[in-house]
Amino acid sequence: MYCLVYQSTASPDLRPAEIDALLEKARVFNRQQGITGCLIFYKGAFLQYLEGNQLKVLSLFDQILKDRRHSNITLLTHGQVATREFPDWEMAYETLFGENALISYLKLRIHNDLEEPFNKPADTPASRQFWKQVGQMLRLG
Image (tube, rainbow, N blue to C red; front, side, top):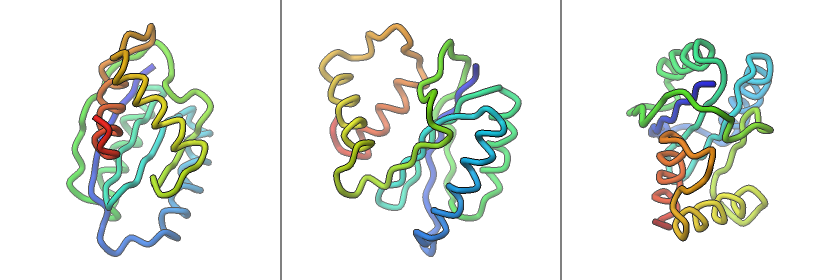
């Protein structure tokens, strides 16, 4: 299993309807390719965690690098992992506006990691980097 975490800046003219269309297409594609992950959009920035077969994830990342809906794409970390971080989500998505089940989960996960930093059996450098970035986006850590 391979994972990859990147961050980028959304194009200033990106509309919510475009994000919805992107997500709908991504979820179908990811399901077909066996890719799971999480996409977070907050204050004009994207943070994404992708996991699956290495060639498929890297091929998807090549497509992401060419996507004009965002810029300043920075690969934060990547590597092999033993288990999936998001096994049930073809692509979880959160805009981090308002309270809902996913944002509650993210906050709980980050607070738990801040109190008991990363002593989990499935902990990986990619997982640590992703949750650290989520915490920074939310200004929790």
